[in-house]
Image (cartoon, rainbow, N blue to C red; front, side, top):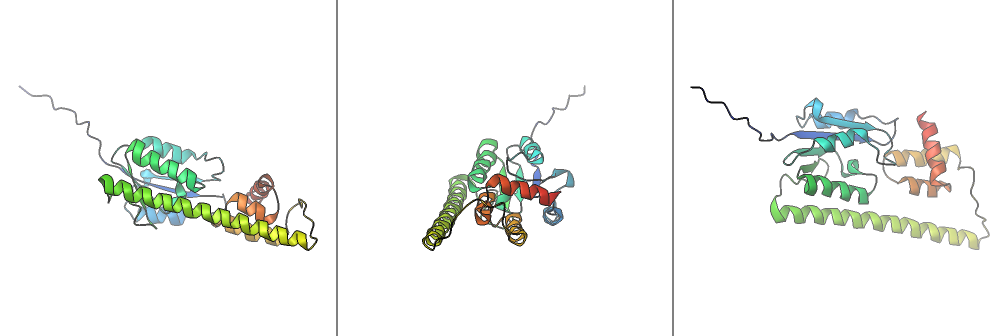
Length: 209
């Protein structure tokens, strides 16, 4: 008599990669190549090539739905998870705590939950994330304070402030380049140019067309 073989429902650990660029004009190839060097299957690499303004990233959403406890997600840098540190922390906790998957950040070896387990791993990851969040907020506060001091000094000299149509094309391209490289946020870029965030996004769309 033959015995029926029991079906193995054990989940086999999967390794995924995620790559993202902020604008249509940027290239994903370098991120993808680095993920492939980690021997990640092509079908397990998810990519988004659009603005993360509203966090509407279809590939990222599909990836998160696929992630299961014990899986590993590899990303090039921490900012792939969100447009700011608040979002990054939310997504980090969602993946590592709610789903139970691991995250490895290639350019920050300390952020690799697959290497640290238990209370020590949780402590290290949470501590690093909180420090990064604090530093990011301090940086924003410093930029805002410096800008306000500059405005105050300019007003003392009789400079009048109004909302210009937009800065010179040269200035916009310089700020736009920094925005694409994630050196400044959209709000910071708009403040640097003296325009509204909406106006800045409109010019970004025009550059992408």
